[in-house]
Length: 255
Image 1 (cartoon, rainbow, N blue to C red):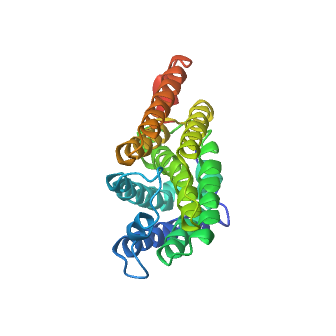
Image 2 (image 1 turned 180 degrees about the vertical axis):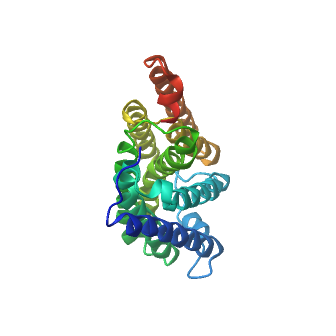
Image 3 (image 1 turned 90 degrees about the vertical axis):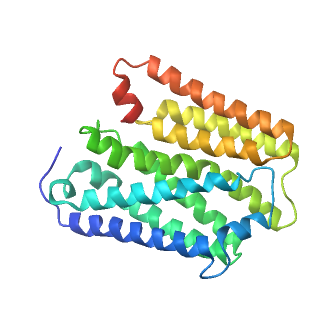
């Protein structure tokens, strides 16, 4: 639903687009190690039981493309003044800037400083996802608003946990097997609760399950593998329960 134009709508929409461009640029620079070391090199130098296999990070391409599509769409005249974009726009702009900042810090091995930044990123995405309370206005909203936000949130949820493990490893205190198992249990429970509470769940659940599965693939410890896969199953069960509790499955799943 559209509303009357607001004085800050154009500023907000432009800020989201700028954030989208900046985080793509940071991703390219950070991935290739053009300024500092590559993010992958830094992460692999502090191995932990919670670091996903390298293939998992391909999801960043999807996140960046989807976020860019969202940014372009919300800048269009027909979209710019909608209440839903006003509700989430500034949070998404902040998320893009925080992501770019995280890449810069991590690439320069400022890992302790990077962890609070990714936590702030998680908060911004969580608030944006919770503000998607207005039913989606067709598949345009589902694919170019709800899905980009929830996929991004799902990945960052697990990345924040993995980042915490990397941070402790950088201080010579990588999580033990018990610590890794505990972190995965709590992550799985938190993700399952989020599935019940979020307005749209498919993108979030898919990204969480993707990240947890690649943790299971990479880790050499059987107990961590099992718990990671159990967490995947818990999230999938939460999605199934959510779908059963609502008559309109399409609206619940996609927003």
